[in-house]
Image 1 (cartoon, rainbow, N blue to C red):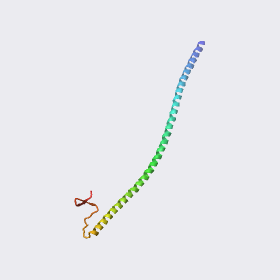
Image 2: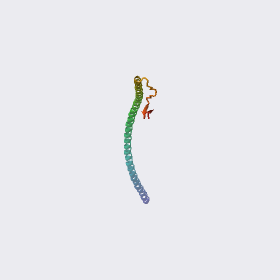
Image 3: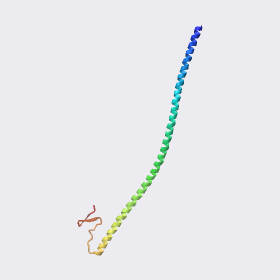
Image 4: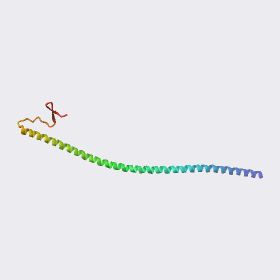
Length: 135
């Protein structure tokens, strides 16, 4: 019976040794996983920080975009106003030019009442003694 007990003891001793080796292997794996988890958590913090920074930059960019859009709208309105003013000034200038032409015609008729001024045209110029369209 001693031999049976010794064999059981040897088997138990081997099982204990195997269990200890398995436990050591699992502890190493657990330590490795713990290290990977720690690194992953640090990476997560870095990513979260980057996301927050990017969100802040995006909010700032959106604010700038809104300001630029407001300015653009204001500039478009001002441009429309200036175009209307230019159109008005062109009309006033044409009227002023036409009035001056009519004054010159009236003065010419005053000094030369018998003159035929029917050929005068405010949009023509004299080239080589001929009235021609201005180019």
